[in-house]
Structures are given as C-alpha cells and as structure tokens.
Image (cartoon, rainbow, N blue to C red; front, side, top):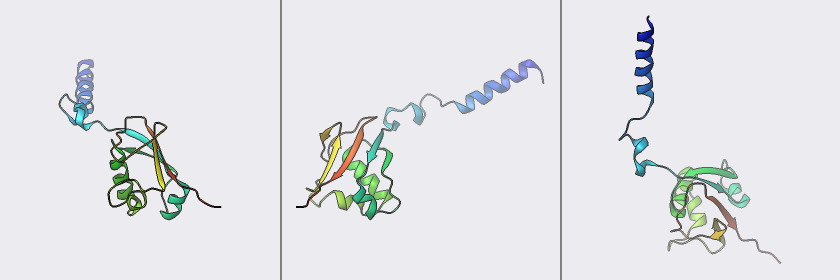
Length: 120
C-alpha cells in the first residue's frame, strides 16, 4: 500500500466519521439542553433507583417533569397537581428563583426540587 493509498483511505474514513452539513448534528432544532436536576430525599425514598442528582435534556420545567415521569412513573403526580400547576408543598428552583411549569430552561441550568418541611 503506497503513501497515496493511505491518504485516500484516511480521507474516506474521516468523511465517514464526521457529520455532514444538513445532518441532525447541524440542525438547530436537534440541539439538546443539558441541565442538572437535584431531587429531594423524600422523593428518592418513594422511587427506588432514583438518584439524588441527574442530567436531563429538557427545555422547560413541564418537560422536566414529563421526563422524570417517563423514568419513574408516578413522579410527575407527586410534583404537579391536576390544574396543572406545581403542588403547593413543592418548590422548583431555577437560577435561584422559584419556577412554574412554563419556566424555560437553558443549557447549564441547575434545577432544585424542594419539599416543604413542617412540624411543630
């Protein structure tokens, strides 16, 4: 195999590995948003296998709850009521501010789901 064949082979291999313009990798709508979600201990106890912290590709708080429910069926119902709105005893914090279902998420956001603590 001569030097010319090695270069041609490398070019073929490289073209197979790199995404082409127009592919999903280059479409804006195909971009995903990685956010970090921290779940409360009370919720983890109800859903065995749920981690304390996880990364998700979502663009809103509503979509976040849907994704959690896909992974752990019933979790969304613990966080959202039938109106739909976030339950009164649950707080979802995004960028250090309380969030609602319509709150948009941006790449790198950290989302904290908190439960109310009561007692006397």
